[in-house]
Image 1 (tube, rainbow, N blue to C red):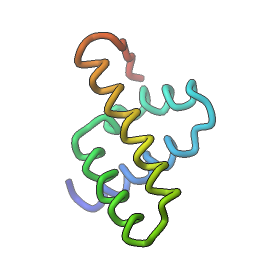
Image 2: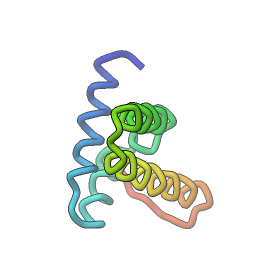
Image 3: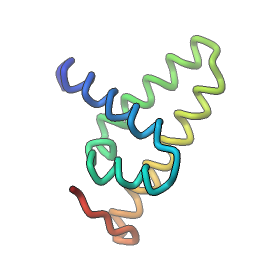
Length: 87
């Protein structure tokens, strides 16, 4: 993944983080299925480690929550328990 793609992915994560309702989050995921990719998970892992190094545990918790939600969605899709329709 090149720098431009990483920047785009980071901006897309920002949209997800700014979602205030579950419906908004679902809409972001439908519009940006790349958030369910391995690259996105690796980026979240880096953000978690960076925030932890900075001593910002509130942000670490936020990133961990989003990471767990995305993991659950990926697993649900893989097990065909969650239908997702991409726009």
